[in-house]
Length: 125
Image (tube, rainbow, N blue to C red; front, side, top):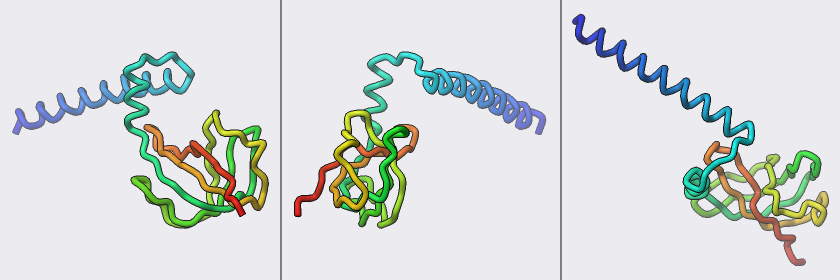
């Protein structure tokens, strides 16, 4: 019984140390610390994307977010129809979007689990 408790305590201590180290590197990443090519390649490999169609409900250029009412999202990243605000990738031109515009979009879910609009195309009438 004593050996089991000791082994459990040792595993718990190792886990606590790992969490502390992981938390430190996560906060460094959040603070804009430079990341190497391996970390960037891992992040890109972990992205999952999907395709959708919807209507722009609001555009917040300052926060780089758009609110979209969309139908089902297809592809590896499946999502039910809903209205949701999404972060927008830096390469997307928000000045071309307006409220009520019908769009097609590509969305991804990054390594942190955040949804990001990677591409927006106005739907042709």
